[in-house]
Image 1: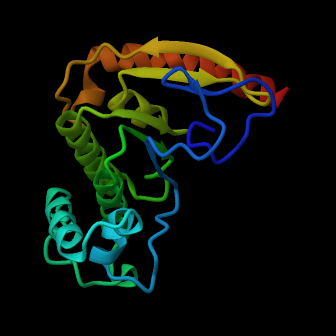
Image 2: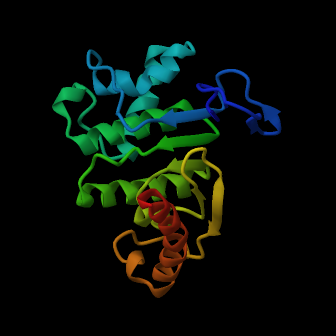
Image 3: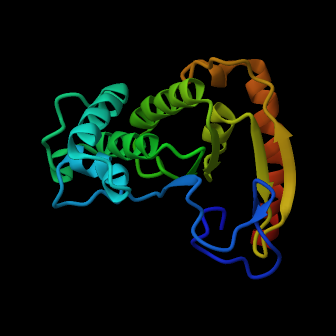
Length: 207
């Protein structure tokens, strides 16, 4: 709904104090599926947002190579998505999102399908991107550890029809060590506080 791809059943979604009534070009949206075009090489996939708005081939190639380097994909510019690992495809999607130049990033469970070790790698990359770009990031996840690790603020929703059940500020310093932060006492305290509210939803579901 923030991206303007889905209308709310009631009420109005506002972005920068303006109602979202059409596709919101101020945001970049990354879904759970990587959505890379299989007939395009990595470089052309990442450069697609610039191609759509008419940037010259030489400029978009240069900028795409720069952003691919920033996510650790230098040397893979001429590969197809079928030749990449799951983590590499996610990096390519992040690179495409960065190159789009949007002021806000929307991520819908982007790392849900990754194994635990690879997910940590992507968490570290996303935290670095957030620190470097200073962008606002809205991140949807069902993984509470992931939420507390990444967020400045966690919003917990109830079951359908979804309403806001809890809004919790995450008082963990940045930069964060994605491996060790979860062993900090403050992490455990915040995790337990949020889980106490989530537990109510699970218990109601079992009744």
